Image: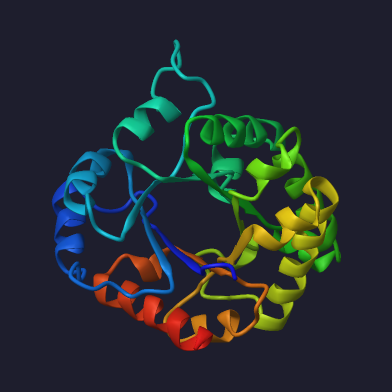
Length: 254
């Protein structure tokens, strides 16, 4: 049985003070069991959050990583640096990174390999644009992105990945894929994983949905057994909303 995973992607929001205030509002004595909870914060907030979350059930995630361990890469952060901070997860290939910072399928693959090498779990984002969706190319796009991300990854390591299906047209727009459409695409992604890494890896890997997920609609997605959680942007920025999302996952899986 795959454990659902809820990851909040704060993007470029929250100062260190605001990040610390957020985690102060999270219950630490008995956090919800049955769902893995991850906070993907800006680089600047990671040290403070690592200190605050140490020993708790919450996992810390970064929003990007460079594929090199060190080097003349001004402004970049290596997997070695993230691991030292107590980071467990790292988002790789988010559509905003692909769109604004020219990330490619090849660079995403390099980052996946680097993260796995240093004990970080990549949350690999795949998804189609509105134009691609309207052209009926959703399956083609996510197939290409998934195969590229998994290229050269041994089956045992592939099991450790998390994939986030995030249709680009639904990110931050208030529009979301229907739960039925999301489940269909995620099922396609799982079949691609089986082709690349075997059926055991396909059944072990967790695949999230992301794109305008809110406490009000998360249950509709999680009622499908192929959808293993959510990667959430705006609705994860307030502690009460984040906790409602967690409860939504639990309620859907009871």
